[in-house]
Length: 298
View (tube, rainbow, N blue to C red):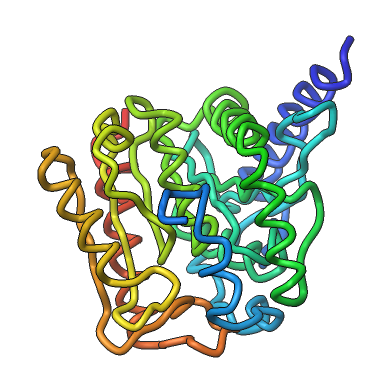
């Protein structure tokens, strides 16, 4: 048996055990806490926002307890890839899934806390790792990690394909969406390009976007884009061009640009954090995910 197949089977078994434990009333569940989408704009994202070392401490708690663990979900370039997997502690039946794509710093505690918050709304969440287990603590380290992904995007594409497969097959999610911030926001849109007919929702928090009609035309996924008026890395002009392209193509989309908000306005550990815009955006995200992933789910 190959190493990949072994870990896939082990992952399914572990998920089943956690699900049984979470559903057992006699068991205490543990609550835990360029201009082209995803392939450009590294320099523009390097010097904006702020480091998010404190995001995990600042992030709001999930609305209800979740179970979370680090799991192998993919094998890319002959290396196992580990992500943060979370689901509600009271889960009984299969739930819609969300692929979470980290910002420039990588899959750190702040992203894990935000993934748990999404899971607390009633979703199975897989926060992926596009950096091979590495995280950055300064802007130059973040730039190096982003460049490594941009220079070999097919590895990231394969990573995301297997993340989708994990939620679809192992977690048996009836519907799946993608959500990302900044660098991950661009890759959330790229996920819709990878699964133009199968992805059910995409949320872009101030990520690099594109007005290229050829790339956007195949997408049949509802899109929610959340941006800041004062974002120097993802300027309003490019967001409006993206919005116009989606409108011209007849795509299901909603683009919101928050006044007086900059890049990383929703990151509680960032210097640009804007509590009012962050809360308004979060309410939109919850409504959007419920409408597209939960409503009328078989």
